[in-house]
Length: 218
Image (cartoon, rainbow, N blue to C red):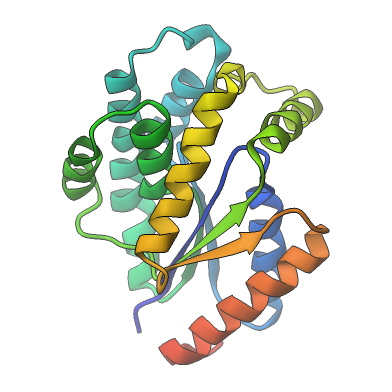
């Protein structure tokens, strides 16, 4: 049986990674095969691209080059990691997918929507998430949380933190517009609560999805 492809979206610092890890642990305890994926990255070439697009040293990167790099990483992730795992019947929890390009490059960078959709058709082989969890926080919280995370981890992934408030307002608006247009797939979760409260909302949603899909533990 085909697996499930579940993506997590939101502004930087929204808590996606924490929620993915919490959901993965609980799904594995229930006996499901779970694969964690992330973007950009997730493959050897994708990890190299991640260094380019997130590093503060590439702050002058052209928006068109930026979106092409993201989709190059995504194409490899889909072909090498995600589609094979779906064929094995795994549940894939992916930290970002094409909705992030729609929001950050389409909304934030104001690239034309057709550019993102054309690249999605080329890179993603028709793959659409079975469910997208959008963790919504205010843009003013995003930068503060992201800076704390980068300080804690010591990684140089701070290029987007240097954008102004208007940029993040456009990104958040784009995410919410995506959810409004596709409410069956995209479920908005209030991220202004404790991680445990957020997790319970996400868990209930995922459990309903799993049951409706007919998936069973292995």
